[in-house]
Amino acid sequence: MEAAGTAACGRREENASITVDVQHCGGSVLLSVSGELDEDAGAALQEALDGVTACERDLLVDLHGVTVMDTDGLLRILDVHRRAECLGLRVLVTGWQAQPQQCMAQVAGMPGSGSSSGERYALGGFRRLIEDRAQRARDSADIAAGWLPRA
Image 1 (spheres, rainbow, N blue to C red):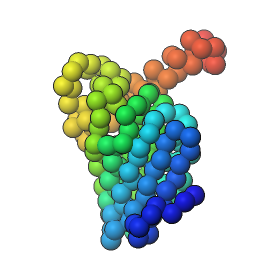
Image 2: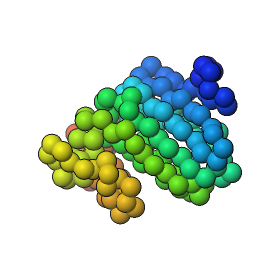
Image 3: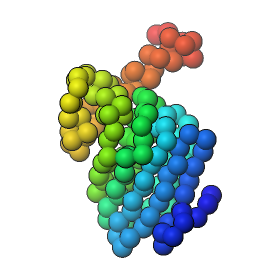
């Protein structure tokens, strides 16, 4: 783990494909994510969220630096969102780039250019829909790859 440069109370979690900068400011926490958001992002996101407590009020997840996301990455973001809500934090995920937003829209079953899935993400029912569909897509991919037995 490296220091996040000049940011007070900041730290950086990273692995080969993702970097998560964590900054605390008053009762808010900013997670700035960059790189590829995939299955390997889980450990870096987990470690970044480990320092967040119920003493904070807000969690802002900035995805401006994420240019590539797959279904596993979407599940990782949903897990961060759920864990933060369990701590009583208000959560805002912002900065959806074209490919990650398109991935989420496709999982939600509303593909097409200009999809507003990033804005709809803030709705609880939409998050549950995305989570359910992303998990089913991941399970189907695992079955096709021979990782899980067919039902």
